[in-house]
Amino acid sequence: MSNTFGNLFRITTFGESHGKALGATIDGCPAGLAISEEQIQQELDRRKPGQSRITTQRRESDTVEILSGVFEGVTTGTPIGLLIRNQDQRSKDYSHIADKYRPSHADYTYQQKYGLRDYRGGGRSSARETAARVAAGAVARQLLITKGIKVQAYVSAVGELALSKSYHELDLSQTDSNIVRCPDPSMAEKMIDYIDEVRKARDTVGGIITGVISGVPAGLGEPVFNKLHAALGAAMLGINAVKGFEYGSGFDGVHLRGSQHNDLFHTDEEGNIRTKTNYSGGIQGGISNGEDIYFKVAFKPVATIMQDQESVDTSGRPAIVSGKGRHDPCVLPRAVPIVEAMAALTVADFYLLSRTNQV
Image 1 (cartoon, helix red, strand yellow):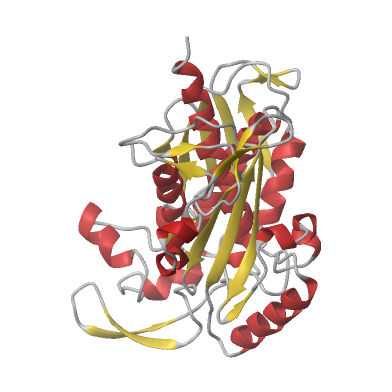
Image 2 (tube, one colour):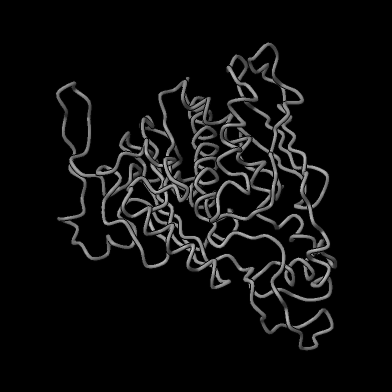
């Protein structure tokens, strides 16, 4: 089950970085949902490599094919098969590390778990696998749109450069207006210049992506072992290079007293029960309360750097690992649609689960 995500809206991904193809099977998507290859492709184009000077220059169209589960533009309720063929593999770029362990990669741990590893781009551990998640997430996103639920994410920090504005103060429709996917034009320019500087130094840099899920009805989630925020955390921590997750006030909340941090209830002009503040991040007791769900995801610097590094070979002898190939100096711009996809998959699953709890 390690390749499967979800309960009722369940996806299983397959494929490797340098294999023939990647793909996903979606099981549990309701029948009658309008979906097209064009809608899925729009999300894949946001994640694909080679889209700007601050991303990897591997050239992949990431063209998606719907193999099953869709008839005359709508889902049939049967498994949906999605396929993305690899086109621009350069496996020779990795022959030099066939018997060496790259620092901070999964090379050593995969070898210990399976007794072998695919050294070509990391095989299954490569971030290229996330293309399949984005394709499946695009279907989940369309399902959520029909329920009035919107999923958005944006780059809020690169290295020490961080937005001081909350998502309420930003125009999130501008996220894709620049290559770093930061909705603040001034900060975006600074981030792009910094990533360029890091790239020219043959190094990498990490940062933070902020996610916002609006329109979520109250009542999604479970009170004990399947809390909504725990599932979102697991979804985000399962993304390559993610090192941290927080929602609502997160770690900043420890600086407040309970009298400051409590979200007081009131009834709005339309008679709906709301909270005056939202330190809870839209989730209380593991269950959504109807307010916006907002969270942050921390990404480490990409582990492959274009510099010589000390390591060992598979026999434990000292070795020097030299970075080669085509890699992102900063993963954040291409990770925005991945964060959105995993959030959409999580909420779609919990939405369907909530319907099974009602008579």
